[in-house]
Image (cartoon, rainbow, N blue to C red; front, side, top):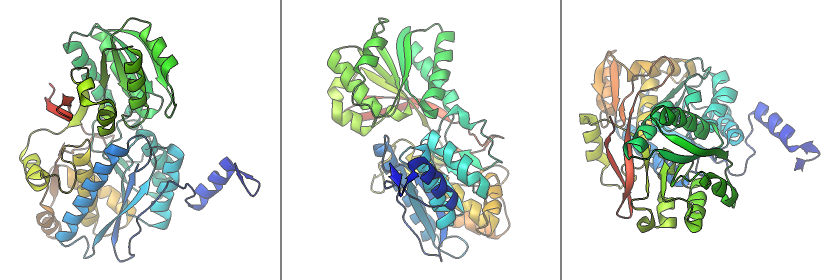
Length: 411
């Protein structure tokens, strides 16, 4: 495809340099210049649509709560949303829109790891804009050269991979086939799982990466099944390759049990394949929060499901990322991006008065009095380490009724 004789890739490079958005699927909600702007790099299109919808709703609920408390710096806060489609190039275009056109002070997101890495490395880092991801879990992010500008309120898959291996072994499953989506998320997760599972005495009969968006994975599945494993560990997105692979594996009678990570916990997968067909044959892991008074308060505020589907994956994390972003702007005392970035750690770590969900008015009062605060979130504490990571906890999910049930945190 060309535009007036300019090759498509070259056109994209020029557009990126100029800060233009050219991808049809990329959208943004604009805001008044009188607002304090927080950007949101979501993925309203692409392979994790059902997860993203609830994360975005939780982010909007947080913004509404902040504005009800009086806003930030004497102004209303606006959430400016842009779509990455979970695509690294689209993420660059979306980040350019938020940073160079909308002039946001900080960004929540992205969600898919490849989109986060690309948006940060190509746009946000050069503009001193901090990013706080609610859902990017690739181990590659830990060692990202980010000038202390990238944070995440979700644990790395280096940890989730270990816990998933532990879970599979605990069920007496000593032989599995393994496939992963061929991107930053899938590969990092697979590497961590593979090392831990083999170290624990498990055997991986066949393994391979796969590409997103194919109509058929039957040949890949047939090869994976040749090793004789009854269980397939599928590290992908339930709204994308995950649902296609599981459907075709079930149709071919290739595997009896399926195991996934956080990306496979999708409503679309259950509605497509049927809870009855999956019950007892499908389980996995997901990041969750520790029991706490903050989590209890969050549930009391939003557990009725009117604002978003409560306990939907990473909705709590999206809420927390917005809250930390708003508090960082307040602590900086201005919308200057570098100042806001430096304040992220300050508002989310000890020392300081503890504040949490529903405490925005209290938190702003403390900040205005010159006092330190320590935000304790709906998804847990967020004491960022030197890499901008948090430890977090992992829980098991299984099919229950017509949906999912999340168990207590694993130990």
